[in-house]
Length: 253
Ligand code: MG
Image (cartoon, rainbow, N blue to C red):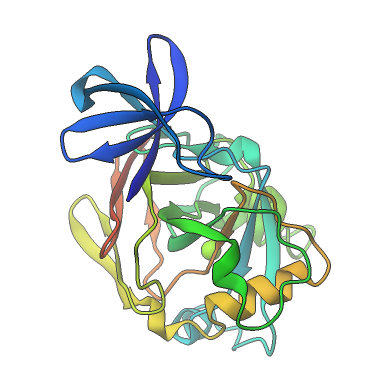
C-alpha cells in the first residue's frame, strides 16, 4: 500500500495511491486506514511530503564502506543526530543551496516512518511500531558540518531548511532489510548499495533510539547512507531510488 499526502482543493489530505487514482483517507493513517469515500485522478492533486515528522532521527556512518570513505572508521554503536521538522520537503520540491556553504552533498537513505508511539522498544519488536518506508535524502552542507572553527557542527550542517526531502510516498509492504538503494546525480549513478549492508539493522536502531527518546507517529529514522557521497551544484537534479518504493527527485536551487 502506498500512503501519500497531497494537496486537493487547497487542503492537505492523506490518501492511498491506487495506480492512477487517489483514494482519500478520513484521518491520519496511524491508528487505522479508513477511507473517506472520495476518489480523484492523481492528476488532480499536488503531492506533498508523505508525513509530518516532529523529528527525523538520523544515523551517521551506518554502512562500513561510507565510514571508510569518510576516513573515520566504523563506530561501535549507532551515532545519532537529529534533523528538525523544518528540513522536510517532498518529491519535486526544490532544495535551497545555502549562501554560506560551498559544499552541499547528497546522502541517499532509507527512511523508516514510525506508526505509533515507541518508547523502550524490545529487541525483535520494532516492526510493530513501523508504518512503512520512504526514500530520504540527508542533504548535508559538508563544510559547515566539519566547521574549521568548531570541529563538528552536525546539526547546523544538516539542519538547513529543505535539507530533508522525503517521498514520493510511504510504502507499507517492503522487505526493508534487503532493498537496493541508488542515488543518481543528473542521471549518473553515484551511490548503489543494499540495505542489507547496514552495520546496525532497523530493529536494533529503533531499540537503541527508544531506550531514551520516544518516537511519535510520523517521526522518521534515517538509516544512514552508503558510500559514494558527492557534492551538488545549483541546477543539479538528484534522485534517490529504493527498490520496492520508488524515486524521490529534487532539484538544487
Ligand atoms: Mg546521512
